Image 1 (cartoon, one colour):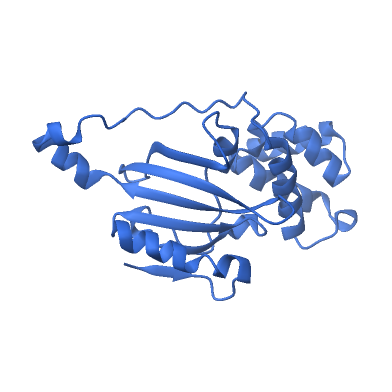
Image 2 (image 1 turned 60 degrees about the vertical axis):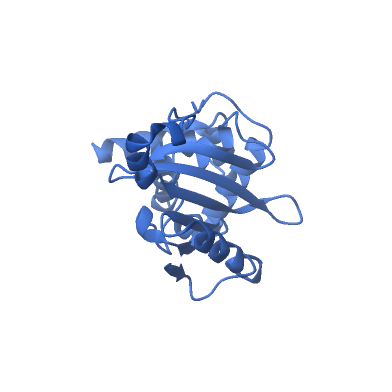
Length: 221
């Protein structure tokens, strides 16, 4: 088992260290466990157990949060047993739990990524023993606005802006475009109302945000 942990970590997240280690030791090297601190969205990963499964490491940002919080299958802040593929093609069985503080704000997440490669090899030889495994990924709908999504959206926007380390009143056009670029990369704008909410937090019009988006996307091309 391998453990990668940020040198300085808040007590709230440090208290979860034994939980991540226990999950990793219980399910073995094929089970990757990732702890996110959304107070720092651009470097939210603060601890990883068995990161070799997908290559996750401390200091990275989140990937699938927007699709997770919009999923119709998200219940009690948990999305369990959904299927995805790693960048190198591994079939993964994944579960994500959102973490809230005493005020009810989503401040982090625990993500479990289990590599099914060994099991699928066994399945080819002993299909009867593995009958019933659901290989169909659950459909995620970007149009479904689940309970609490708007609150989580506001929190992510607020923390991304705070993470810039500059008061909004002192931000330059480039500072604001950098925020838009990061949020666009994380597909935050797939959520209904995200442009309007960001415009409000950055004290600009929604048309300005759309202009920033156009410029950011044109530069990619």
